[in-house]
Length: 257
Image 1 (cartoon, rainbow, N blue to C red):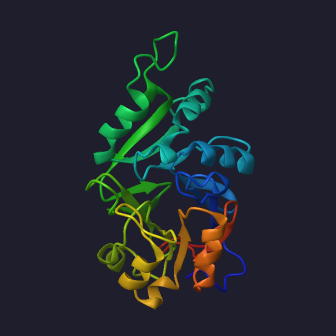
Image 2 (tube, rainbow, N blue to C red; image 1 turned 135 degrees about the vertical axis):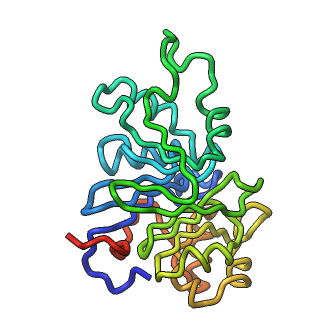
Image 3 (tube, rainbow, N blue to C red; image 1 turned 30 degrees about the vertical axis):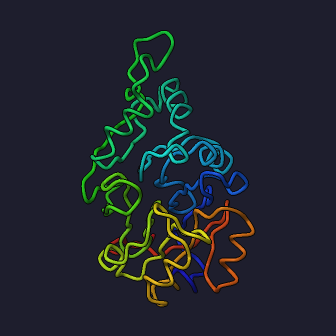
């Protein structure tokens, strides 16, 4: 767990921590930072993209997509416009997309007849699409990708930065995945509300499925309200807040600068 670290070159900025109806908490989205600069952003929600602009004064240059629900992809039209009309960004914004998500992402954000009213532009022309399987390399560092339990099988994915961070994305409990992909003392940013449902974890679910030693490493997000966040804290667990910056361990194999 990332406690006891006074200084770290690696941090996680929570751009939003709420579920689809938690407007005051922002849509669940985060950016991994290296030396205070954005390194890799997770998802592209509308509110999350606004929070990104507020934090960094620009749009993200590298994103990993967990799944294709609108609270996680609603910022894409704005990101397209920002990228296409900036020659320095056009075709350079890296999108790491699990290969199974590509058809869904195409249907939901890219299949409108004309990306621009004037025509002549494909939606994906603004980006550099990198389909990924169970891992990918970003700026020379390897990250792992794994399926999670959110609605239909193989439509939602988590991310691991080895030895530093595991981001579950939206999911039910996944003890078998975390046994494999969170075995190096990573901080685990985990979907958790006060009450669960067939697509999202509730705190009772996590307390039933996970040992306390693993729950102590969890940073809970994707809850419904500020009051629910306080109730989760009252049960003794760590709960993320929008705008919070969390220290991370340096990923394994990366030499601290």
